[in-house]
View: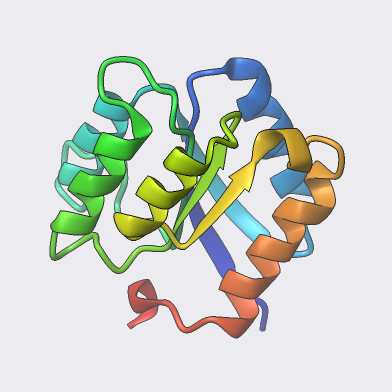
Length: 146
């Protein structure tokens, strides 16, 4: 039986979000995607997982995270996720329009699992997203699946 991935997509650019959601829909992996447009909104959602008023009933299996977010940027959000004992094991895939080596190094030093430049994946977005989803759904052991 194929796994269903519970995905949290955090991207403030609605057009980018639509492209990524489309790519996820084309994936070989069945998934449920929740989209938020700010780091602050994502953090509030993550902090309220499983609570009656929470938008998320369970932890996401993976998080796709843009770096350039309003108010709470992606790097700061990544740090908060990885410092939290309940959330730190969730794989975080950075999808960013930045391909600056400083951003790449910072993201990996804070615990990002993958850093993908949007300029690369928008040329082959469906294939790139499918590859990531197949890996996390069928190959990797996820802590959210205990």
